[in-house]
Length: 286
Ligand code: C2E
Ligand code: MG
Ligand code: MG
Ligand code: MG
Image (cartoon, rainbow, N blue to C red):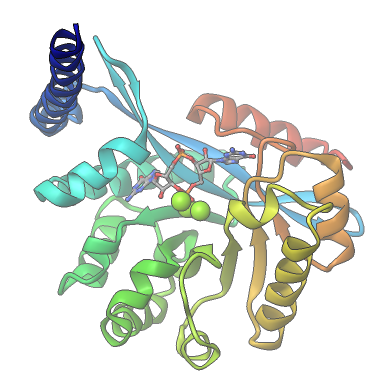
């Protein structure tokens, strides 16, 4: 009986492993074709500035979506790391930049373009030579302008090779692109390092927002990050705000901007256009 049980366990375990491996191979093969098969989409999540006049959309973050015909929606949290490991990230990013540029032009023509459209750049790419020039070339060739865009770089990515990261960010900034440090608080940046970054925005990772305002430690951490960022001349964006209590706390603490399901989930380009249109004509005061 035990032998059988063991055998069964082993079998189940390896079959699960095999399934994971198969899915990986499949995703890897099919990601190459996803763009040309029209399976990739950009969704946009609004960033709201907290002003005395109300919450105003000052930016949208583009978030990639892959609609696989059989596997359904594949999360970027799954396929972006895979794309990084296999070198497929480059064409994916090129697609994202052209698509975001194309959309930005549509919004510009309709006079509803938000001040900033954020694009996530993966750690692997940030370190590549010539990245800054390529991004700018792509944007300009599409007929858009670099100062319509912001690049989001994760804190950990920036920390891996700090000097290279600073060089590339400086070059992007020199061409008018805004820089945001994403998922802040999960890495180990020193103040000295943060001071050297040519960034305008610092995004507090959702992990520190989730248990606000009741978790006393998170409350202190968030308060400290906001104070530190402000003293360095950076504006703060809180990610993953889901409740009124979180919003209330962040507003009290002087957080500049809010992003999260409470004020808006990531939406299709069409739904985002509708939202931008409704807010430009009648800015609602939340
Ligand atoms: P991120 O850049 O930190 O994006 C924030 C993630 O939090 C998004 O997940 C967003 O949908 C989610 N989110 C927003 N508000 C809330 C909230 O209130 N509650 C919760 N629980 N989640 C919220 P998503 O779209 O699945 O993206 C996951 C990650 O994949 C992103 O994290 C980013 O690192 C990466 N990613 C997404 N799009 C791209 C892309 O175009 N290029 C690259 N290189 N990476 C991307
Ligand atoms: Mg981001
Ligand atoms: Mg983030
Ligand atoms: Mg993230």
